[in-house]
Image 1 (cartoon, rainbow, N blue to C red):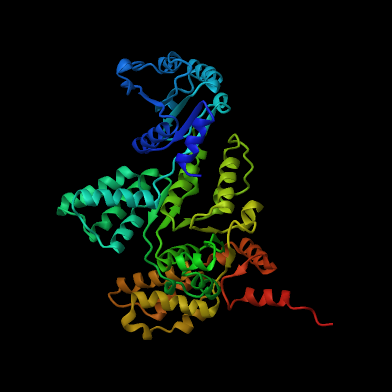
Image 2: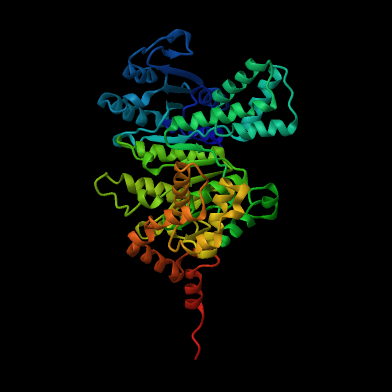
Length: 508
């Protein structure tokens, strides 16, 4: 059910107090006015703290700077008069005992009257004593059709004509922005060149980065890494390549659902984060990075509000990749102790969304310690697949050296002994291999010469890999994966052999 239909139904059903959480005040008020006209052409009264009531010449400015008087104004209208009262920023006064009591009194009286209160606020903050009388309605960011209508109107107004494919690219780029921001960025392009050009779509992307940055929850992450930058992990790469067209209209016509996401579990530095970036680049989708710690805030209800905002932005930008790094640290041993149950509520909202989302948001979560994650996170339906990313085999280490040295010294790659380097680096992760090469570069640079295979081996000899310093934890993680609890990202590894041996039936 769309917002217009839902709000119209609530007005007709005489829901006394409706709470609308949105940053788009102007668009929301236009939608409320439309619903008021549809529902018997009801009168519309708008109040804010500075200007008081507007829209009624007889009461212009009434209840200015007096929120309690604004509620009393509702009772002055005859009981038979149908009206909608919009109260801007009224969430700031809900903790006042007189305001809360008056709202509860009004909720009882308005059940039998064709009047409704609509509270407009940028976020949901409802005291417990009002939770039973207030109905929260979500007001999503504009969908593609709404954006297309507004973009077409603005371009026509300035005499600009774009090709259909450019218009569709512009609409797609604008998803996730409010109507006001879309108007601003189009005006910026028109002001710069006298008309909006296809090249100005980059301005939209910059505005989108700015919008996401202001939320302080998500980051718009540039993804330049490709699948070819991943050394090894052949099983994982095959899985990803098979789903390269899974977000297309052709896939929908075939009957395929949108891919849900991946949980990448494994040892630090083995390429889990790199994989998230490579997926976004290969699938040509925007990459949003979520720091789960930013969801948690000090004020009551704010953490849950931030979680809903994160979901709303992600779905508005869909199709996109939502990258959640080290999710095990955020939701480890969720029990709600010491925070009034906030962690449990945020976790519950998040995993419910993972299971029920229908929007094309592909979630890539990484974790180093799977055993600290709640079992609900691992249940089928949250993610399409759980992959274990272990330490690279000798063959994969050779591929990793090849990737890094091809990027740094493509002109004389043949001068490096890749098989020897791979052989001399057992238990090294991809990140540690990269660091060894950087250390070798420092050595060569300090002596005013190019670095060599021997320099890399010298750097390797001085490094102690994580597989040795945290041997017990890593062995426990390997045992967990070898027990068949996750799909192996690498085709040729010691764990693959162990798993095959476990699955092979014993001979009689």
